[in-house]
Image (cartoon, rainbow, N blue to C red; front, side):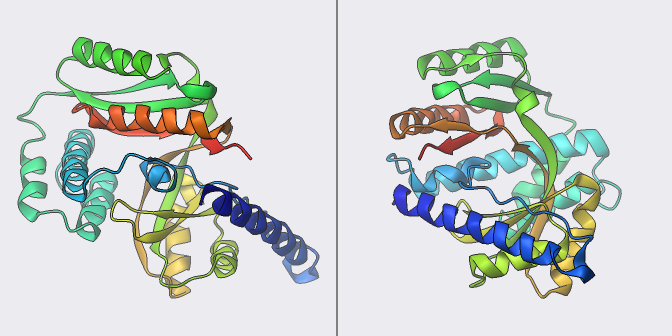
Length: 281
């Protein structure tokens, strides 16, 4: 299955180059933007649905997802207030929660409990198997405890805390859209027309296929509006760390990294984990 993914990714990359070249040769399109398409779609926590051997029960996975979103809502409320009309980050999270059918009571409880429950946000930098780099976002009321726990998890699975990992990532806007039978070729065309920098095909927590359109932060609203005008059903938009320096891992290293990321995501204080992992051809 992994081999099929890599083969399809190379074919998609070839189509990207051909499509961009043909558009740039057209006199009417000299101002076109080059589109980068990733050979392996390893952004965020969804990447492991096709490579890991350990299968988490869906109920447990959903419970963990709900807890993570509650933590992210608390962070957003503390940073920008409880009114989504004046807090863009909170508005984006609430939209994502609605699309994932999170309980209304959980959402309201997270908003109300943002100030009553203590906690500070940190982003740890780390390395993992094969020299991959990780950004680990946590929300904790005891940084010493969280630091030691994350350090222990990393050491147990071939990783370590470090400095400089953030240099391998850019903060980007990400517009998520329903796949709705859109082919890879059509997704590429839509990304070019909407002004996106990249388009990725992934699966969400419930294994539903979605498209992620990567763009500059300042262009996120415009890209989403353009996609909607092209009759693409957008689901949400938000800011993510997107890697620009991939680490190529062997199958054995991928399996070890999968176990490490699962252990990190099982940590109650961890909100999200980003990495720069790609499958080695």
